[in-house]
Image 1: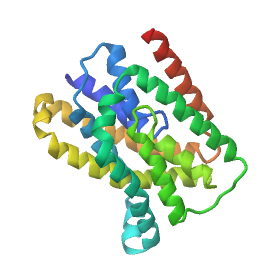
Image 2: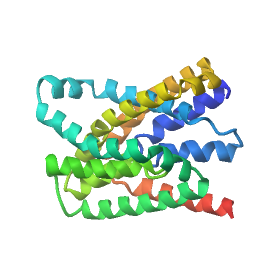
Image 3: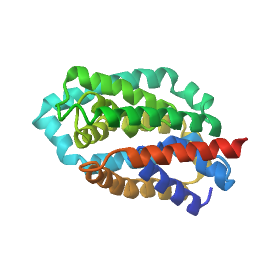
Image 4: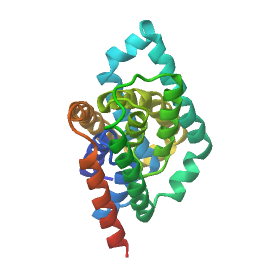
Length: 252
């Protein structure tokens, strides 16, 4: 892998982790379309750590408040992280290997779009509730869908929050906070577990990919929070469906 490839893949990860179009799906699809050799999962993990750092930096004030002030929100994040942590520990490796084809990603993109469509329609009826313990666990179950490449962690959890009556902006903010423990924990575990594979990629591409995903991730978080203040998910639904149909067409 060269530096340009690492830079592009890092930017794709940073953008698509927070915009609800699936980071894992795009990290599979784009190298295929560009004819690049498939990058090891360990490299994808490094990119996820870059976006995890973006989350920590962007929401540092919220994180410190949860630790020393609003501990209720901190416990809601912990409770919401449990479903994905358990299911990820048990099944993530098998799922990644089973659904890493372009056809699988295309199909899951469509299924995720249907969920977002339903959430967008129902979000017009139920207004501006606050998250509680039951809701945090339910949104955590939606987060588990992100184990499937093509589903989108942010798309699943924002949709879950909206179905529970949160506003788009509240759902997005809770979605991003909820992803911090899972992304950081899973990323560190995978990096430790696959240290040998990281050596094969090279230090420079790893560093370039990491900082690319971090910087673009900061921009993507700010963009999504501002975008959802007065706009919905429809543009992302259309993009996902168009991309899925294109992928299915070229796979024929």
